[in-house]
Amino acid sequence: MNKRIIFNLLLSIGFLYSTVVTYQADSRFWLLWLFNSAILFIGAIVEFVKKATRSTDKRREAVNE
View 1 (spheres, rainbow, N blue to C red):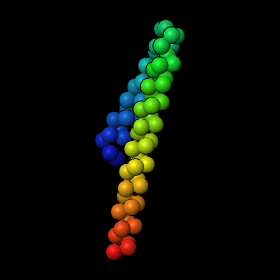
View 2: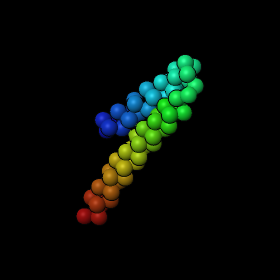
View 3: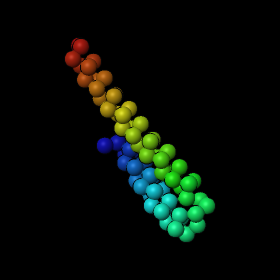
View 4: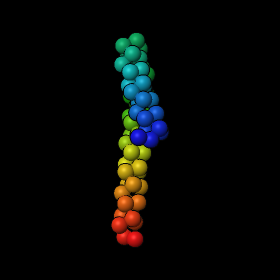
């Protein structure tokens, strides 16, 4: 896997954990943490799809040649 994908996934898990802790301590900021976690998770998914698409395109080019 790509290091960027793993990094985004770990960050999103960290933000999700922070969301739970922040919600228990002070309910004002939990939505912000949840939003950050969602953004990072979506970023990791987008990177994974880009990488998968790139490798599929390379295979198609190799077959076409």
